[in-house]
Image (cartoon, rainbow, N blue to C red):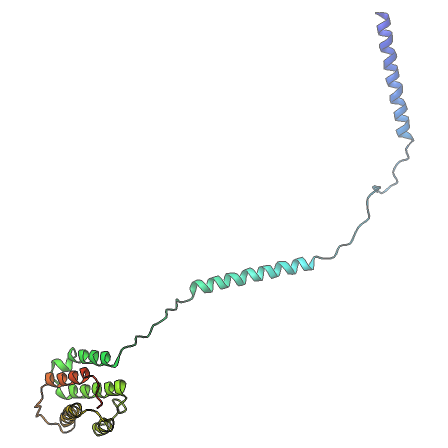
Length: 201
């Protein structure tokens, strides 16, 4: 028992002696000079301002705004619809004009003077578009009849044209009330001329 206590005391003394030697070694290191300077660190380094990075960010922001503007313009742009022109033959155009005439107020009121004006225009436009005869609605009756004769139009067609246009001129320019041709017969004659194929001889 006494031997155990003696060994414990001896080991404690050895540990105490070791600690004392370590403390004396630490105390022997010289103290840091004043100013709290830390050794083994690099000095202050100067760095340039990141201009290129800043310019890149600005360019990216401008690009994003431009793309947003393009998208907004695309959203708000009106839709453009392509209009396909409807090409109709001179015969179809003339028949449609006759139908419009029959549905108009002047037909209902039997205004023979206005009907004659429309009939003459339809005939002259059809002759110009289909056969290149005359100059269209602007031609007078005499000019149109001379063009018909010069283009060697068949006699039966020429005689119907003369009869119809002379009647219309009499109604339009002389103020005559002698409407010896009914409006239905007048339009039927016009339709017959339009449906006649091959005016020329």
